[in-house]
Structures are given as structure tokens and as C-alpha cells.
Image 1 (cartoon, one colour):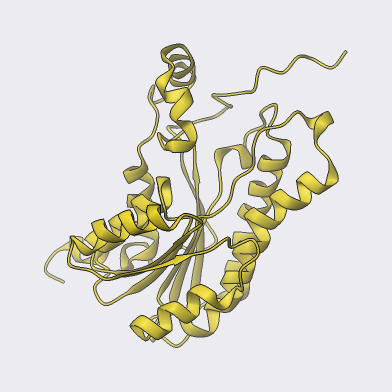
Image 2 (spheres, helix red, strand yellow; image 1 turned 90 degrees about the vertical axis):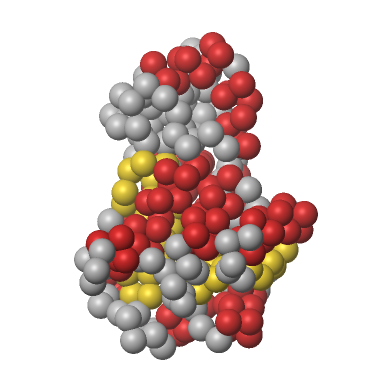
Length: 265
């Protein structure tokens, strides 16, 4: 090895990234391409995917777009696209997920079911579809799940989202144990990152200032900081990590944002 930076290369690798039309998924796709990987990217909106694919191709790498609602699509859809186009699969990033904040007493069982399905079940189904291809590689494979700081830190209004992301974090640990030693499974738990999901907050100086004041590093995170963490976990630089959740949250020890919900009377 002539340089330690070579450990961060993904030359010849193929990655699937879900939820890649914008935000964290788009940043991860671009970051992986910069490091030498070809990518299969999926999201609901074809136009968003096309824009990301164009930026990937500008790096000299290849991109396949798969517009789909992964909460209802066949789990093999993305794996089949990777194998058909590139002949292999090395990395899976389960980024798709989310749930709108909602007061706990207004949250119904169907809301929890929907959040759990979108954030955990979808990730599991794609993982199960990917594993037979990942184990074909001599070096095994890498799976990265995107959880959230609210899966660890309590905040009002995040009952269903935080519960689902906490489940995904522990699922990561359990899956890593089952898939050792051939496949590494890790997760990233972002805090407040400036993406389209946070654009309303980021544009409001008062709200943004309050969040930054409650964040030890005194600022919001950037998508490329999450992408760089994903690159570390996907590459040989992170080859001795599995079953870990890396917290990319500015040092949070307590929530830095809560819904303005009243006390229960």
C-alpha cells in the first residue's frame, strides 16, 4: 500500500443505495462514485434519480436508476438490476425511510406499522435479497443502515419514527452477528443534517439558531459528512468494524429539536 488513502477507494465495487434521489442517499451515491464505485440508485421520483445519475456519470462512473416505491416493490428489484448491469454486488446502503412527527396520543397502531415497515422491514427484505450476491465476493460485502439520532435520544413527537429507527439500530447489531464473518453490517445515526427534509428549519434563523445552540459542535451537519462516514464503512478503511452504529450528530447527548407539544393535562 503506497498511501493510506487507498483504503478508502471503491474501485471495481458496485453499490446499491436506496432513497438516493436527494439528501443523504444522493450524497452517498456521489461520494461512492468519487471513490470509484458504480451504483444502483433508487427512489420514488425518476427526475431526482436522473439528476443524481448525471452527477455520478460526470465522475466517470456508471449509474443505474430504479424508480420504485420500495415499501411495495419486490425486494429483488435492486439486486437484479445490479447483477444484470454490473455482474456483481459489493455494498448495500439502506437509506430509505422516514415518518412524519406526530403526537403520541394521536399515533395509531397503523401508523407504527407503516413506520416500522418503511424503516425496518424494507431494509430487512433488501438485505436478505442482497446477501446471496454479497457472499460471492472473496472479500465479502458491506451493508450500511441509516438510522437516526432520535433512535437513541427521546424527543416529543418522534414516538413512531424514533421507535422504528431504534429497532433498525439493534437490527444492525443482530444482523452483523448472523452474517459474520463474510458480511459486515453497520449503521450511521445522523443528527440534524441540512437536507430537503430539514430545509424549513434551516431557513428559519430562529429555529436553526435554537438547534445549533443545543448541538455541541454549534452547527447543523452536511450531507457529505454522512457520505464520508458511509465511505469509511463501505471501504477497506472500515474493514474491522461490524455491528457498530456511528453517530454523526455533532456530539449530541440530548435532543436538539423537539416538537412544541404541550404537557399532558
